[in-house]
Structure formats: structure tokens, C-alpha cells
Image 1 (tube, rainbow, N blue to C red):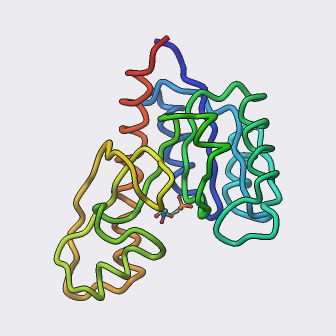
Image 2 (image 1 turned 180 degrees about the vertical axis):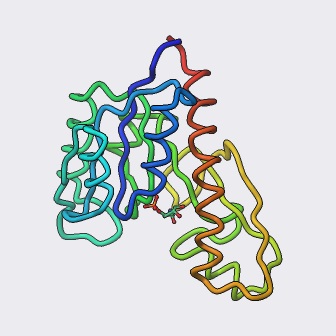
Image 3 (image 1 turned 90 degrees about the vertical axis):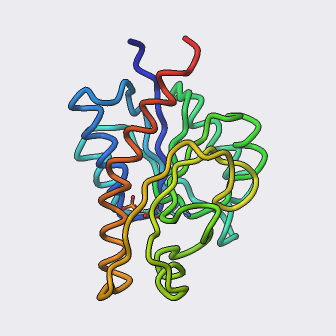
Length: 195
Ligand code: GAR
């Protein structure tokens, strides 16, 4: 089966990125990570890229906090195209993508979010679920569109909220589910892409 060329974008610790790289290494996902890019200079996801010998880069995001400056987003498209990327995987990338990326990779950008969307989009979704008094939350893999944590849902996994949960314990349990769900969902999407 063809190995789909992936580009991974992330802003933080990169545990989902590691789970994806490990799943590819053990043959569970038919893909190849061509490049890992971060908008945060010292993000741990870039250390993981180096550990797995994957080409990687820091992309200076520009002056905005919630999105890339247009010229940075155009540069991102250029970098991904130069690496031959056919599917873009957001793994804790904390900026909203706009038309340069959405037009360059239509229905070819995936995201994982730590809630059962459409519930609790946005930041620290596990805290939102905890303060609302839910008994179940989870994680969602979805196609990316122009809205925050929004787009057609590909896969979801439920995670129970336990009586003594803290935000940290709940997020850790959700992340364990993410590390199973995301590689499996990526593999399903890769299998269905045209050759
Ligand atoms: C993950 O929990 C992911 O679901 C979340 O950021 C974390 C990144 O962790 N993403 C969002 O909240 C997107 N709105 P990681 O860097 O360890 O993979």
C-alpha cells in the first residue's frame, strides 16, 4: 500500500505526534512523515522530530496570537508543498488556519480535539467538561474548516469523568485515548485517499 506523505503541525509537547510516529514505525499506519513544523521555537514537538530523524522547522508566526500572519501561512504552504505533503495533521497546533492553507489542502487537513465535539470547542476543553459537571467527555478527530475546532467528524472516543478528577488527571486520561484514536483515524483517511 502507498505510504501517504504527511506533514505534522504542533505548538506544544507533541505526545500525539510521538504516537503517530510510533504507529508508523510499527506498521499500523501506512504513511510517512515528511516534515514537522512548529510555530513555537522551543516546542518539544521539534525535539521529537529530531529524535525520529524527521525534517523539521520553526515557522515564525508573525504578530498575531490566534492565527498566522498571512505571509507566514503562505510560507507554511510552500514548506509543506516542497516536502511533498499530501495530508496535513494538526497535533496540538494552537492557531486557526485561514484560506492559504484551507485552499491549498482542501479536505486534506485533520485535527484532534480533547472533547466530544461539537461540545466544548476552544482552549482547555477538558476543564470546560469538568466545570460543566459532565460525566463523560472524550476526543474527536475531524476535518479542519474555517471555524475553530469545527468540521466533519471522522472519529470519536468517549472518556469517563471520575469523581476525584482534577483537570490534569482528566486531560491525561483523554490524551491516552487520543494516542489510540488519532493514528487509527489517520490510517483510515490514508487508506481512502486516491492513489
Ligand atoms: C491535545 O490534547 C489536543 O487534543 C489539543 O492539544 C493537545 C496537544 O497535546 N488540541 C486542541 O485543543 C485543539 N483545539 P500534544 O502536544 O501532547 O499532542
